[in-house]
Length: 431
Image (tube, rainbow, N blue to C red; front, side, top):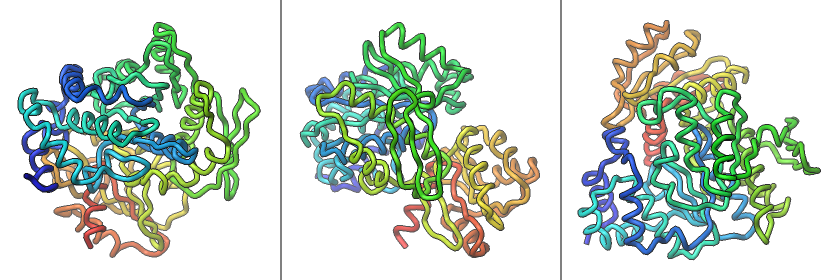
């Protein structure tokens, strides 16, 4: 019998893993996941689900929705990806990771099936999550897609409602070259007569969702049109524009994305309340939002690790997300900003680098994955955009150097890839 570490080695070494090989690990149809879950007795049919896709913010929105559901007293399964430190982060019930023994047992019990069907790493993790949630006897599951939507392995569920946060350019090599095509892939989670929430109204692609929803006879709403908010010093007032609903939320930071993600989660909650026999009350909604990090065991996304200087790590990795990060931190009054940056090799980093200012300090590195963009190549590209900095062999050494150089009123920002975040968190928690 393998132990947990040996089991993970089997999963990473024997199955196609996106972190290692990129697009070739992504299956272009739902055949494998359908066969896998059928062999498991279709566990995803045993409980209701909420399905979440989008380019940015889908993980955070999933955690907020899960926390609201938990705060109302429900037993909630949450499936997200990727993980940062521990594979088990992907599969949680009421914020608690799947146990190491359950991971080992699942792989041991179904290794023959894996060897016969040759699924991807992601397909196995999705099947494992669905199976674990059934065994845990959950009340509802919140399921985040991986990439895309239409052909994503999670798209075999028939949810109570679906959510698409927003659309921007990312993973074009797999999802398509433009916003319109990417939106079409994400719209693939819109199901027949199933309510759909679109987080951000975007004229460039709103018709994709409107047309798909009309075809499926699915009620559609745009959260950014349904909700507005007023940001005060210590709280935010969220106002529903079509209903007499005001909600005051204590403001505890959260970076440039949080308010949009909360708005999307609020609209999803309103829709959930309209179709359930046990609607969630305002107090549970408020608690779930204010304490979602703790309730859902949230990490890696706009995570503040220290202060004086502020140290923030975030998984923003495309133009839309990075631009919002820059708008936010450039307005915070920091004396200097120290960027620890690393990227994957299939990312068009020039579009990101050209947004950065030569006034900041840069520490170029690379995440510890096969697909990483070489740190020296990153520096060369940065130099072409007028950015100068020092190359470091790995994320921990770059982080250590940035901390040593930063003054109390500075910011140390570590990002560029979720894999950079993973390397940092692993280093910090081992120290």
